[in-house]
Length: 437
Image (cartoon, rainbow, N blue to C red; front, side):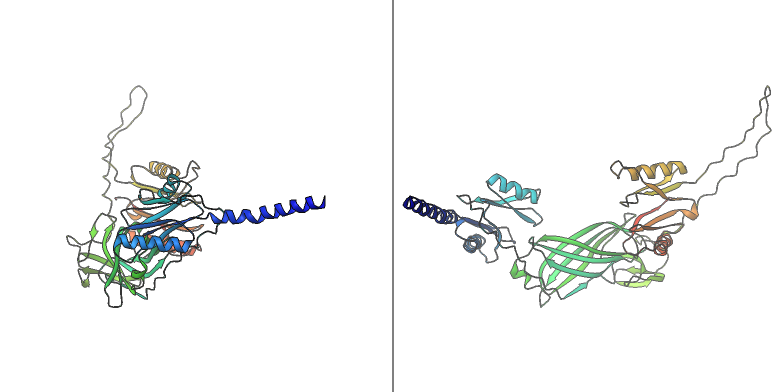
């Protein structure tokens, strides 16, 4: 009886010690490497460890590209398959899965519209107890200085810049800027040049921003991103030049380098005592507006309302009374701004024929954005030459509004009221609109 128990115990011990080694023996690892210059690729599968798979994939990629700039895009294990996709803008992403279709689908989901560079699988399913690959550690970007190349001659001034490499294998180029011209801007295009020790261009790219960028208001930390550059390129970067290459104003006028505009704020963000005309690279006191020069917004007086003609003598028939005269036209138009407090969604109506229509349309346009909640409220109504424009500024649960004949003064009034109600001043303008008269 004792011998039988001992024999069973030996068998059990053999099973417990033999099973893990047989499982751990099947642990295939695969990798895909790519070149960020032209998206050449190389891969390796069924390798015993991450280091071997990465080295083999990079070697295969460098052989394909004819250079030595390939990086490991993905190491896949315990997932059996890996896929890498890229698009025409230079962005790329990866996906993993137990089948080719699953890995490819996950990669495309990460970059909709991307084209598949390579999908490949290990021949066996990896052990799920295998350690996951170490996270990607990006090469840090050491940009020591930046320069706003168009600072003295463009309607937009950049006052802060940062460049960072990200763990998702992208870069983030962030800038803060302000509009120093005489009217709101709705689109800006920038160019960035990453320079080496000798001011040679290492990399360059462009980026555009759309929105409403009101005069004198700081626009903080607007960022652009793209596929991270090769390590060899990153290590050469020492400084960045930023230039404004195009601006579109709210009246559809386009500024480009060498064109004129009217400057009403200093590069430091303070309002000038008098407008200054920037003509190409020359700064002069602003003359009267001329063709090609963007002029400051000035109030447009409402036409005089015709005086009704004297009423004729009233005529009565069969006891009924009445009267008549000449109808006088009206030139008044009406506007209103509605807002949802929780989200700061706004609805704007302007140049309406009567105040009720302005209120109705502003509320309707705001409530359309609230996913059926429909709890927008009218913040301000405006009409007539002395209240042609209206502006609403918001910071959290604090708001301020202004209305007046001059758009710039109206913006300042809204911000002053926001500040007096406890709000902080930054990129606060959520609505800025003027009636035609």
